[in-house]
Every structure is written in C-alpha cells, then in structure tokens.
Image (tube, rainbow, N blue to C red; front, top):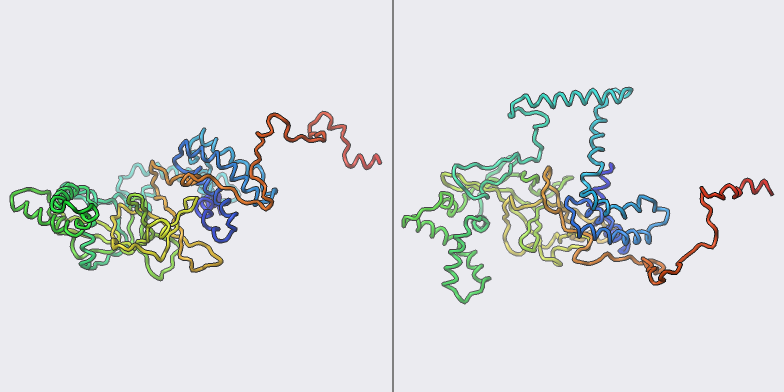
Length: 468
C-alpha cells in the first residue's frame, strides 16, 4: 500500500477493525492513536481541539509503551508529541503534507517511455501535456476535452428549470443514472409521500400556521402531541379544501400551490442510481455482492441521526402546466435510539443494530436531505452472527465545505483519555514534583561521551587485550 492508503486505513478502519480481535485493554490504545491523527488531519482546527491533542498525546504514547516492546520506539514514535504544536503554528495539515506531491510524482513516472532516458521522457511528455492543455482554451466551451470531462459521479449542476418561481425542493441539483422503470404507488405510499413533501416545503409553513391556529381554537384542551397527530391525519385534505375554496371566492394562489395541493401522480419513475452534491447513491440489491457500498444513507433531525438502507430512488411528477418534479428516496430505517439501535464508543465510532428497525412507517426522504455513509461489518473470530455493523461517513467527492467534518474524537462527552492496565501495576506517569528541588536520580558512574575530552584516554577492547 502507498503512504496515503496507510493513512486512510489508520484513520478510518483501525478504530473498529480490531475491536473484537485484540484484548480489551490493547484495542483502546491503538484506537486512540487513530483518533489522534483523525482529529489532527481534520480540515477545520479549533483552539480547544489542539489543546486536547496536546494533553492526550503523552498519555497515548505512555499507554503504547505498556503494550509494545522498547525496541518499537524510536524518533518517529516521539514525533506526534510535536505535531499539535506544529498545527498551531502552521494551520491545517492539508497545506503541508506530501501526499499531493507523491501523487504528482506517480503521474510523472507514468510518462516514462524510454527507461534509458527517464528525465528526458518526463520532460517531453510534460511539454506535450502543457501544450494540449493550453490549446483547450481556443476551443468553444461546448467542446468536450480531457480537462472539461465531468467526473463519473458529478451531478453536472443539472436541475429542473421553471418559468415561474417554485420551491427549492422542486429544483434540486442532481442527476439520475441508469434505465428508469415506471411503477404505480400504492395508496399508503401516496399518502405518506404527499404529506412528507408538504411538511418539508418551506413555502407551506404559513399554511401550516393557519391550520394549527384553527385546530388550537377547536381543541383548546388537547396537547401538542395530540394536535400533531391530528395534523398528520387532516392537514392534506384541509389544505386542498382551503385552496379550492379560496379560488372559488376569488382569492389568488401561486400556480405551484394549486398544482401541489392535489398531490403527485400515482405513476412514478424508479432509477437505480442518483448523483448529487458529490455523492453517488445506488439502490440496494438483495443477493448481489459488490465491492462498494453505495446504499447507506443518514440524515439528522434534532439530536437524532437516522441511518437507513436505500431501497428505491423515485422521481415523482405533479399534474399541471408547470410539470413539477421531485426526487425522493424510499428507505428502510434502522432504529435511531442511542443504546438500543445505535451505539457510539469513546472514539466516536457509530454502530447500528442491523435487525432493529424504526417502528413508525416513514420511508421517504428528499434527495437533498440525504448524506452518504458506508456500512462495514466487524471482523470477528467469535460471535460471527453479531448484528452490529459499523457506520463510516463518506466525504463528498470534489467538495470542500467550510464546516468541521466531525466532532473532536479526543474527548467524547468530556471523558478524558483512560490508561491501560500494566502487568506490574506500575503507574503511568510518575509525579516528580513531590520531591521538590532535590535530585531525583543521578548516575554514580562517570559518563564518557563520544566527543569527550578524555575520550582518547579510554582504552578500547582491543588495546586492553593487547596490553594484557
């Protein structure tokens, strides 16, 4: 593996890959090293995060000394002590590491055609590449060239265009891929899909406010939970009645409202793949083995994070002049309750119970609300049928957002770094401050350095033997 491959394995896989293979006192130490470098290499660094790194790395290395032999430690194992200070001075490490240059060197090595003249081959091919790249600017923008070729998973900025204003959910940026299949929605699916789209449209909020004010006046003794149940049941027919009565009485409504309140068509188009915001989502297929996992989805509502499996990608249309369209995902949700369906360890690794599902039927989500995750099974020697699987977040391809990638893993929930048990029950760090200014330790023998003034007077082994 290359250096960057080892870097990814250390940060993404080691925190959970050996959880069931190593001793319970050994795995946290190895995972702590991975958490340290994952926090160090994040795109957004904070003062508190660097401070936690500086406080925890001495304990991490001392824990390593308890489980690894002394011959393992050299100057490279001591180097992490100085990395938080270097991050304080230099900022995020992405501007200073060598992975980009190593990748570019690999690009240059591929240009070698004559092994007897390596440098000349690189120069000649580089000149050809620069000349062709410069010539691309003389072609019209619609001409497809190598540098203008979109990535395989690029959404290409495609979105539905309308002649009038419509809510943003009808103009999501995304691109469907594969052969579409038309199918009919059941009445149960139609009802939940229509309600979900209405309640997730920001322009419908004022109508929701009118409806909630009416039912609060009709049912003053009911709680908010009871009113919410009433809303899920009667809001759709009320909104349709409210708009139709308003049109009859001469009130004007936007065209998209008139078309939207009647609900989508029962005939929807199903696609196997959808690309949006740097993600490439693919429908889960039972019984098919793939080396990639593109069907994992997560979304956050309040404090709960929902994880699911993508079952179907649907493009729904609305009848009318505007031809409103919207892309939704039909999902199979896992139980999101912490401790029952989701577990989060001290290093921030999330796991879901693969056999526990969300009890409430709410399968739909907008494509713009979904984030991509990957499900990885734990390597196990025992308990092979354990249903817990690891969730790993996927970074969008070709996108860099100005927000932290994740919360700091060094101090989850304010819990400091623990120490591991030693076979001799020796304390991890000895507190020398209790001795005051007295000498704690001194060598009784005189030390002779390599460049000492008296080093010439010290007889060597060979000379002592000859003297004897």
